Image (cartoon, rainbow, N blue to C red; front, side, top):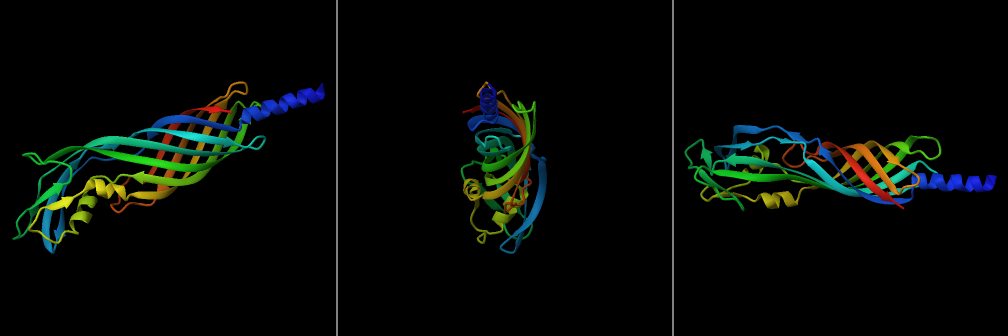
Length: 251
C-alpha cells in the first residue's frame, strides 16, 4: 500500500511539473515614444538645409505570440522557446521639399512608395517588432507542497529581434547626408531601411504559473525586460519591457 501511494505521489508530482507544452500569449509592450515636431538643420554636399517632420506619439503597442515549454520533472528548471510580435500605427507629416538655407535651390524629397499631396506628405506608418527567443527558467518556489499548483519563477535568455526604425529626425539626417547630387530629387526608401535592422538581444523574466495536476492546462503571467543593440538612428525602441498572460496545454 505504501509503495502504491508513493507511485501515485510521484506521478502526481511529475504531472504537476509537466513535460512538454505549447500555447499562446498576449499582452502590452511598454515602448513609449513622445510626439516629435520640430525643424532640424543638416548639410548635403556642403550646403545647409532645413526640414521638419511631425510624428505622432507611440504608446504601449499590443503584443501577441506563441511559446513552447519543456519542464524537467522533479527538478525546478524549465525551458521556453517563443516568438512574439508587437505593433502600433502612427501618423507622420512632412513637406515635399527640403528647404535650402543658402544660395542653392530647394530639393524635392521622394519617400519611395508614398505620394506627396498639395500640402506635402501625410501618411500612416507602422512601428513593428518581431522577436524570437529562448529562455531558461528556475521555479524559485511553489505551493502547496509536492503538487505546487502555484509556481513562481525567474529566468533569462537571448534572442533575435527585428525592429523597424522610426521615421525620425536622425533617420532623415543620416540618410540625406549621403546625398551628393542636389540637382535631382532626394529619395528615401523606408522599406529598404527597415529590412536590415535585425539585432541580437538579451532578456530577464519573472512570473507566476497556475497549473492543476489533473488538467493539462497552465496559465502564466510574467514580465520580461529585453535590451538589444541600438540601431543606426538612436531610436528609443531597442530596450523594452512587456507584461503578458499566456495559456498553454501540457503533455
